[in-house]
Structures are given as structure tokens and as C-alpha cells.
Length: 212
Image (cartoon, rainbow, N blue to C red):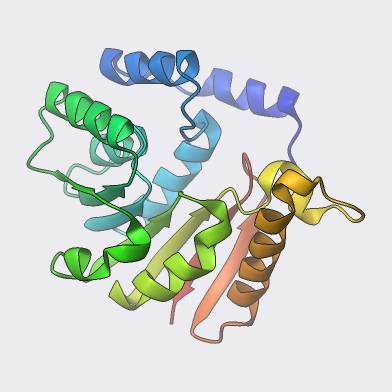
């Protein structure tokens, strides 16, 4: 993994976000809500830009930060995002309304494991962004990768989980199942002959999979 010092330095080089995004960053920090770190989100936006992405399906809205960053960087792109936590869903609606992005970001309240039919009508998608319950990544992939167009990409965040996924030896009991599931997911990505996958030691680890 990249050291905190290097991440801090890279983060210092990234230009200041607009006031609303800065407000969201502060809100997330104060309320311990996980959003993408600055370096990771910049990398994701670059990948989406290279792929000429016009529509994204996001699994895990949180407060809408990454969805809003996508629409800011890619002015022709729309996002469909699903969130199961009601408090975060309502906060995301509030921030998206402040940003006047209701016509570009479609929020769906529900559990992504139970909502493929509700999302299917919005597809197919140029990109799928998975950033929700880490122990369920393989299931999210199974449910929603069919909605990704040929040549589209799947971005999976947090696939190295603080480097623990790559470490040998015992894993703390509280995260053991999640780590085992992430390892299984990563191995599946690399052996799936329908995709070309590369792992990047950015933030908590990111996998980029291109659909053949």
C-alpha cells in the first residue's frame, strides 16, 4: 500500500473542491461516514474519463459524494445510485438537491442485494462502481455485471482493505469473514475470462475490470 505520507502529499497537489463538496467532506469526517479518499476518487474519475463514460451504476451512495464528483468531472454523465441506509439516503438527497443535480443523479433507496429489477430499467451502463458492503462484492458483481456494456468497466473500491487482505497470518475475528470474501472476490476477478482486471494500491485498494 502507498504510505500515508505519500497519499498526503498527492492529496495536497489536488485542487480545492467547490464549497458544497468541501462541506460534504467535512460532514463525512465529523459524522464518521465513509466516503472515498481524495486520491482514490481522483483516480476513479480519471478511469471513467478515459473510458468516455456516459452513465454509471453506483452500489453504495452514502451521502452522494462520489456520485456528485462524477457528475462534476464528467458533464455528460448520469449516475444511478442505490443506498440501503435511510439516514444516509436522505442526506444524499439533501446534498444532491443543493447541487441541483436531481436530473443527473437518480437515487434508489433499498438493499442492492434485493433490487436488481428496480435498477435494470436504467441500464445498460458504461460503468459499474462497487463501494458498499465489502463482504458482498462477489454477489454485487454477479447481480449487476450483466448490466455493464461490452467494453465497459467495473470499479471495485476497498479491495485490499487497509492492506489486511494481502497479509499472511491470522486475521482479527471481527473482520475475518469480510477478508475471506474479499480475497475470494479478487481471485474471481483475476480468473474471470470475460474481464481484464488490474489492481491498484490506491487508497484502500482498487480493482479496474474491463468487460471483453
